[in-house]
Amino acid sequence: MAATNFTSEQAIMKEVVRQGRNRRAIRLWLACVLLALFGLVLVGGATRLTESGLSITEWRPIHGIIPPLNAQEWQDEFDLYKRIPQFQILNKDMTVDEFKGIFWWEWAHRVLARGIGVIFGVPLLFFVLTGRVERRLWLPLGGIFLLGGLQGAIGWWMVYSGLEARTNVSQYRLAIHLVMACLIFAACMWFMRALSPHSNEPAPTRYSAKLAGLIAIMSLFQIYLGALVAGLHAGMSYNTWPLMDGTIVPDGLLVQSPGWINFFENPKMVQFVHRLGAYALFAVVVVNMIMSLRAAPQTTHARRSVVLFVLVLIQAILGITTLLLQVPLHLALAHQAGALIVFGFAIANWRGFYGELPRQTSIVVGD
Image 1 (cartoon, rainbow, N blue to C red):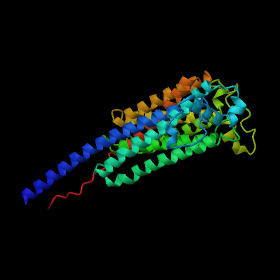
Image 2 (image 1 turned 60 degrees about the vertical axis):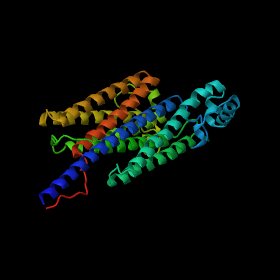
Image 3 (image 1 turned 180 degrees about the vertical axis):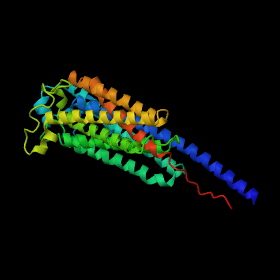
Image 4 (image 1 turned 180 degrees about the horizontal axis):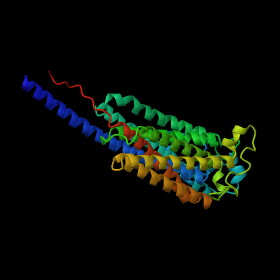
């Protein structure tokens, strides 16, 4: 009987080692996906900032990966662009060579998005077929893959809004597109963190986990507000800080009717709310850090609260500088990158309060 128990214990140990090895492989895969998603968001930001998003006027998920290869194909693509309001109103003097400059940004964005589908889907299929993914993760990881497909459709839906009656895309659809990208990013971060070793230290206070969740949600809301600011070009005006239009609370915040529309279509109101959201997020992060350092100064949770504070502080400085300098490309991209870094760290910090996902084994030690 003792020999049987010893054999069963050996089998369990082998299973634990195998699961640990598989989890490391899955974490590495998800880290690569996160890096690709980070790059995709930055290329998307550059596409928006260079007004390149409407340069490809057709959605060709398969054939669209091949760019124009000769002068005639470039001219054909340019002729399609000439049909939309952005060219007819804003860029009617554009040449084919100038068109190529905006085309490549949008093409790179679309190709990278397709590439992420491969980076995510192929390894996932391999891990499932070879038994390296725990069954309880099949559904959530498969759901992330489906969200990626939905994101592609949302991207085209966003582009389509600028092809007929507008010279740019709808700020509503832009915000939805960016938020969906962030949700996919957050889901990958959440599961990568869930499969990582955790410290066994208790939360500094009974409010710490809730505060971490609040910070993550507020970070995502700030990204949503930033998308509205970008869609309305609201950062190109009121380029002073801390005052806005010469005062703390500027006039003209509710000039449009009905009143609620100002929060989505009035550039002054949208920028003002984005500023308020930044102040609120900064305040919550400071409170979280002070509470953590007072209650448990030597713990991993406290150290993470300090890192989160530093990241938010850097992001605030980037945001203010970007505004004061009237949104130069390199600073605007740095600000967008900072937003995603803050959000990703906030998600990882939140998940850190719940410990590593318990390991499962079908092997049972006999009595």
